[in-house]
Structure formats: C-alpha cells, structure tokens
Amino acid sequence: MKTIFKGLLGSIAALTLCAAATTAAAADNYPQKPVTLIVPWAPGGSTDILARVLSEHLTRSLGQPVIVDNKPGASGNIGSAMVVRAKPDGYTLLIGSMSTHAMNPALMPNMPFRGVEDFTPLGLLAYVTNTMVINPSVPANNVKELIAYARANPGKLAYASAGPGSTNHLSAVLFEKMAGVEMLHVPYKGGAPAVVDTVAGQTQLLFSAGTQTLPHVKANKLKLLAVTEAKRSPLLPDTATVAETVPGYELSVWYGAFGPVGMPPALVARLNSEINKVMALPEVKAKMTAIGVETATSTPQQFGAILRRDADRYGKLIRELGIKGE
Image 1 (cartoon, helix red, strand yellow):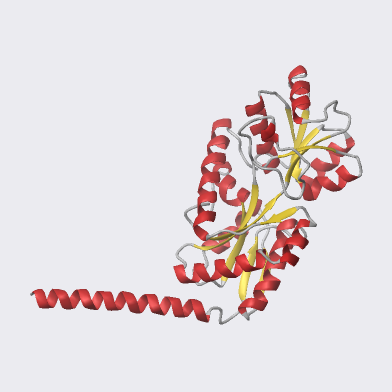
Image 2: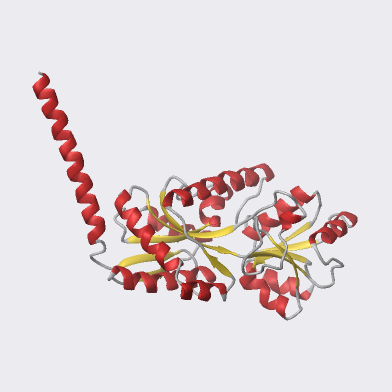
C-alpha cells in the first residue's frame, strides 16, 4: 500500500511539473497570432492615445500585431465586459481605469462584471494628472482661500462635472466632505461641456484631467489651484496638492492593463515584463507627458493591491453618499 501511495504521489508531482513546464513554454512561445487590445472608450482620448503607443511597441517586441479595438459605451462597461467573456489565453486584453474597475461597480446596479474578481491585473500603465481649477472670477489663489470663500458662500460655489459618479464629481464630493464645505453640483453630459462652461463662468470650479484643463490655464482662462494626487505631479512640480491644505485628500486617476480571470501565471509575468519595458521607454514617457499623462510600472501584485484599495475606498464613499451613475 505504501508503495502504491508513493507511486501516486510521484505521478502527481510529475504531472504538476509537466503542467508547469507546458505553461511556461506556452508563455515563451506567445503570441502565435494577433493580439486584440480593447479600449472601452471612443478614439482620440488620452486612454486611446496610451493604448496606441503601447500597441505599437508591443507589436515590435512580441512579433505579432497588437490591434487596438475601440468598444465605447456604458461608461466603459461594454468593452470591459467583452474581455471578461474572452478566453484567458492572452489574445484579448483591456486598457481599464480607476473608473471602470473601482467606481462603476458601486455606481451601477446592473453591472455586467465585478471590477476586482473578474479580471487578471497585468500592470499599472499611467496616472492622469487630475487638476483643481477655477474660473478667474473666483477670488481665490490657492486651496485655503477657496475653502474660505466656499464657507462664506455656502451652496453658491458651483462645480461642474461630466455627470453623476464621474471622477470629477467624486473629486468634488470628496473635497466637500473633507474640507467641510457645501457647494452646488452642476452635472453635464460629458467632460468637454463641463470645461467650456467653467471657462465661460457658468460654473466656477472643476476637477478634471490636465489634458482638458491645462490649455485653458496657459491661456489664462482658468486658474490652476492644485492637483488631487497624494504627491506633487512630476509634470507640474510647482503646483500644490489638495492634501497640502486638506490632509489625507487624494484621488488618483490611473490606467492599467487587464486580461480575463484565470490567465496562467507565466503568461501574466511575460506580459507584465513586456508592458513595463514599453512604459519605461524615454520616448513613451515624453509622448505621454506631452498630453498630461505620467507613465508608471508595477508588478501584477502591486497593481492588484492598488485596484483593491481604490475599489474599497471609492466604493465605500459612493455608497455612503448615495451617488448613482447614469
């Protein structure tokens, strides 16, 4: 009996080693056909630009075409759900964001996926510099002065957003809560009209990506007060963070690469290595810096920890405040 038991253990161990070797070999031979990189938003935005830069360099390093496929709709849910349904073989990947994976599951009642459990994190790609800007008519030159103005005028300072549950809406709600101010929310159907009306003075305050606001700051049509990340942005080193006035305030908008759940670890490691090499290239850093995006690298485990942290933090905030997406 002992001999049979030892034989079974030996067979299991051999099969395990064989499977691991086969998986590793498959990762080394990957890819054998074109790879689809889904972007769950329309062409032209910063996410699309990032995806096309990544696909160009991955095509060279992997030796197969990496094709960007834009699948916009439902706040990024349509394209993201396609990746959930794909085979976990590395041939269908996703450029996701803080909004699709950490916010949407708490905002929308009929989600087609779970932001954390239904994906394999491959690696962090970049952070968008998220700015706090005001119309020049507002008598404030820094965050402290803005808080004083808002407290002296409760409910009168109007802030624009791309709609309920958007990152600029959540940025402002978090600011209200932590700074102890009351403001007026004016939602729009997208980020562009929110910027236009803040420039025109119809609204006075906006939290938005630097890609949308900085051209107006340079033209003196908007006043830049701060960035919302925990640390000062390397792209705007002379600009304060909100946290320097409101301790603990942070809202970082990130982009990352995902695959379907169940991808082999060796394949995840291979893709993470290739993605990190691309994001570390000087020419890639320069191209993304030009549009207000800071490139980043990580291990899959580090990126997974960021995802879980933000899903917990922002999900809790969204539920506490009863915010509903559109």
